[in-house]
Image (cartoon, rainbow, N blue to C red; front, side):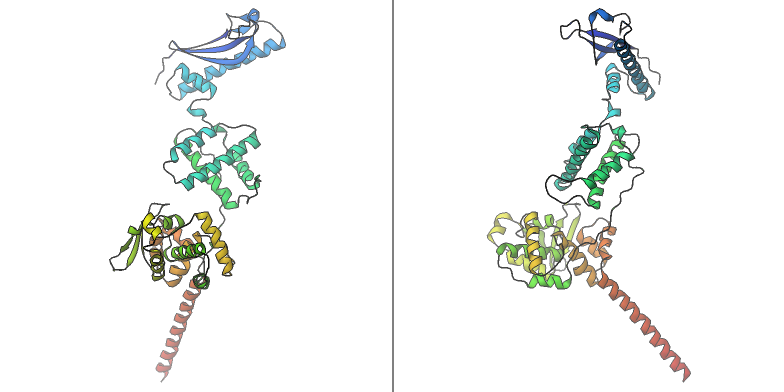
Length: 421
């Protein structure tokens, strides 16, 4: 499509300080009679300025450098106009000015991308997820400050080197307050969040190509902590004197027998306990994380824990099915509970969900498809992570195979004996 817009660029001066020895030099862009002005951040005296040429008169080194700068500015403005023409963009004085200053959509910065993402996602993603994005944002700001000595960079400056350097920065970052440094998987999570934001930039056409195209996230597989049958029984049979410890123990055991996460247990209401088609009690709820509907038939031990807190004053006031403390308090109590039971594992409340998947269900022959449904997983492959840790189940399956081979061998021996008679 042919563009018939007219462009003129005028370099001129303006006295804004009322000092004839310090005139500010401007560039005026005019397209179809509409103007846009840019301060070139350079100054000159009125007696050396050549209005007709738009340059400084003289031959000194200082004059030559200033005129060279003005020539370069003129060329860059004309080049900005040429770029817009090639891209088929609408040509206006403001558009040429924005392209020259790097303020149009082709020159968005990393900070602008992060702000755009977090502003738009705050109503889409959960608070816990957004908190992680804010953490990644803080790492990016520190990295830009320490590595590039700048608060921001253009998106077009993102490349493979930037990503690798950012990875090493997170791995080696030493916080001022004493806390654990980022593990490998923690580092990969920060990079994964940055990758999601750069993918958004590509879709918005703020980036021509994905800077992560040659980079591969490298997660390390880790064994998930869960309780064995013996350890579960130890917690059940241990008597705790403090009421708080008893509540935490019971709510934790409830999660072990239902597979619900901390937030899903905390939000359970009394009306979500219903009679199922089999006339037994079921929990009907929806996972906070994935919004997947979950229907769980209650095991007797889980029902006993609900009965323990039914019709209490707290339940009648709050409508909650169980008394659940804050996540931090629960995990703090669990450390004391496991220590008192002689369990030397790093057990958190989420370990209850792993215990349900492994010790309670899969180890006892419950099909993985059923377990996946009760856990509220949207993908069966997520549940298969639990299946790989079941050494007991592997041993039982192989023992059954050995028994089958022995049975066949005995049958073949018996057939031979009968045929020989």
